[in-house]
Length: 95
Image (cartoon, rainbow, N blue to C red; front, side):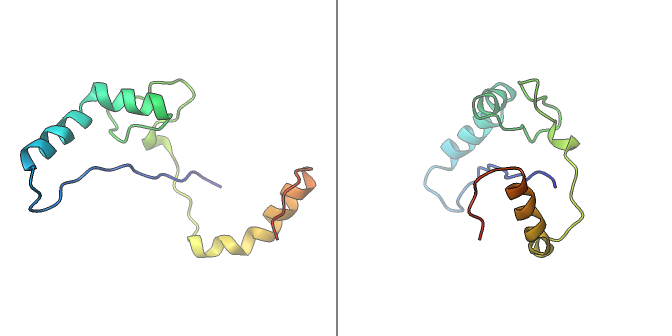
């Protein structure tokens, strides 16, 4: 069906007491070395398209395909999904 992409983020609170430290932290987090170390530990993908994931099984973020189906329509296919799971022999209670 596709992949779900959840972006981890960092930001600053307007008027926060440590603007200089916040900027320094964000700059540090966004350095290539730190981005690759983080995604390597968590098996996530770097969102920066200039960086390759540090593990061979990964697909680059820009290679993911967008599913052309509104989320509200997914419920229309639940019955087929449930039957497929049950027919595969998995013991799941999906009622």
